[in-house]
Length: 351
Image 1: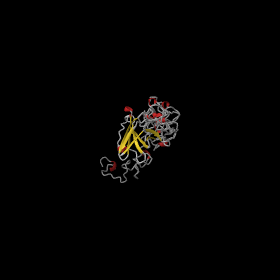
Image 2 (image 1 turned 90 degrees about the horizontal axis):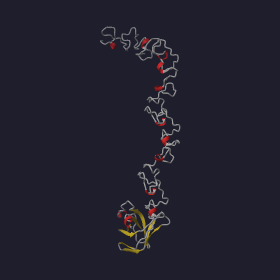
Image 3 (image 1 turned 135 degrees about the vertical axis):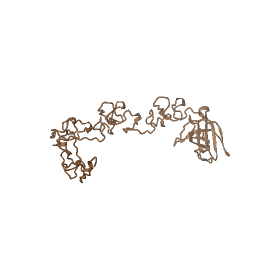
Image 4 (image 1 turned 45 degrees about the vertical axis):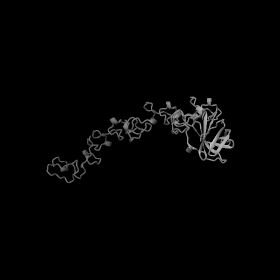
C-alpha cells in the first residue's frame, strides 16, 4: 500500500450507505504506532488502505478493487483514496465498501501532499515523501519518483541510475559497484579506459604484439587459447605440442628439438642430434634414419616395422626374402604368379 501523509481540510459532507447517514467534520490523521494515514469523521474511522490516481494515472477503480473490510457497527471501514482529479479540480475521493460500495467526494487542500515537510512547489517529488530531496543528476526530478535510465528501477533504488541495467547484478570484481557504473570493472586498479583488458585482472598489462588488446583477453591466432596461455601466439596450434618443453610450441619454435641447430638446417629436427651425423649422406641424420647406412631419402617402410625398405631383407614382411620375392613390396606369402611372368599376381598389372 502506498502511504499518503497529507494534511487535508474536508468540507462538511453527508455519507449515505443503505440506511446509514453520517454528517460530520472530517480530518486526516495518522496512527502513532504505524504512521499509517486515516480519515476520521466524528467517531467513524475510514482507513486509507490504498492510494490511486497519482499524477499520470487514471485513478479509475471499481468495487471489486476495494481493499477495505466492511463494517459500520463500530468497526473501522477501509477505503481507497483517489487523487486523479486533485491536480485539476482539487477534488479527492474515498472509495469505501460496506454492504455496498459507496463514494465520499470532498475538496482537498494540501500544500505538502506527501507530508515530507517540503511544499509541493519546492518538492522535486511532490507525490512521494523524500525528505532528502536527492536528485543525482540535478534535473529537478527527485530520485524517489524518477527512473532516469528506464530500466524499471527508481533512481533511489537503482545501483546505477545513469545506465540501463535491469538485472542490477553485473559486478565482475564484486566490489558492490555494478559494471555499468564501475570505472574499474575488473578491480585491477586500472581505469577501464586505460586497461587493455577491462574485464580481466591484468595489472601488468601484457600485450605481446602491442595491438592494444591485452594477452589476458585476446586469442590472436583463434586456436582456442588466449594469448597469455598460448605457447604459439601467432600460429594456430590447438594441441599446443612443445617437443622440447621450452614453452614455445613446435609450430613457432625455430629449434623445436633444442639441439642448437635450427629446424631448417637440422637433418633430424624433432630429435636431438647436435652433431648431425649422417652416414649414408641422405636427407636424414642417423638418429632418425630408418636405414642409416643405406641412402634412402624416401624413408619408405612397406611393412611399417621401423626398418626402411632399402635395408630390410624382407620389405613386405611376408616371410619371403626380397631377393626371392616376386612382389617384394606387397605381402604375398603364396607367391602366386598365374601368367608366369615373374611378377606375383598381387602386384602384376596383368596377372
